[in-house]
Length: 327
Ligand code: PBG
Image 1 (cartoon, rainbow, N blue to C red):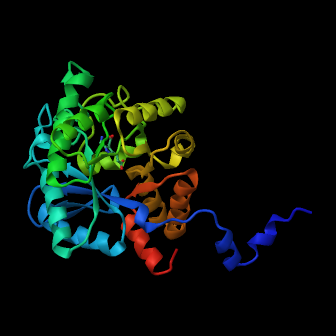
Image 2: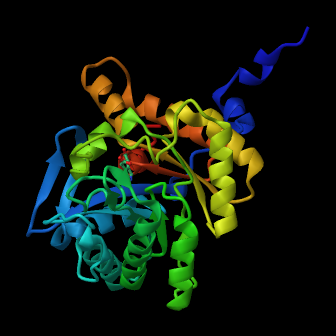
Image 3: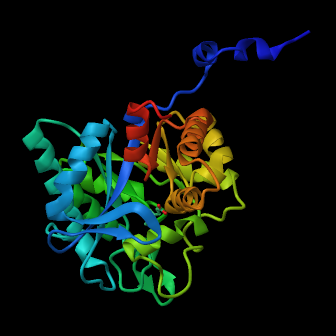
């Protein structure tokens, strides 16, 4: 008889034949940074996730280094918003300040973190859309130079990679062109290639204060009924010069991640988004499930599906559990 149970008999054997490992060095932690002094405010819809002021970033840097994760993804929350999201393109804006500070802290410690700057306008615009408006529509082409400028400012501040998340067509090419013309040829582009219009971003919009004032993002983010279209988005980003591709959200989109893995030669990133994080936190708090085991299972599933890197709010906690032998 074929007995598959033979290889499941002891823990040692199960470990030896296990196909997938979660490596902490493949995790990226998203962080939210705001103006002000000496603040660390918990985000109500995301327990354990905070908005930091720039002067408190040393804390995050040390925690990330100690956890030995790959790096940080930076989200800026400006003080004032306007139609064009000007703070995003300001060399003295919140994202640029945060990135400079993170890199300074790293240098002072003689250590390295991979810093990725999220490039989008929704946190910065008064209307909360990811590009500039023309009537009620987001004007794709008019938004491109603003994204390129925002990317340039973050790259000059020291970002290792920029990650355009607005789903504007041509944004990767626009950013690559701008960075190259300014001599920033080593800064990578992590395309949010297949980003779906998703209710899983709910808690993030609370965290980043970026919900659209009117309408939704379905005119630019992908329809979640489509899988093949994700592959077209990925092919477009590849052609435009992306260095990484991404599928987002992660959990409900593992079929897309797997298809992306099979189709593309680029490193694949999946973004374990805010709603996925908050669901786990809420259920764990209610005593409905065991958080450590659930997170281990979820992160493993991402790598089993073919992800090379995972962006997750659980990064630091997971690293700690792993270090303590709790997962
Ligand atoms: C900005 C952006 C969003 C997320 C990452 N970048 C929100 C959105 O598109 O509405 C979501 C991240 C998360 O939910 O954790 N466009």
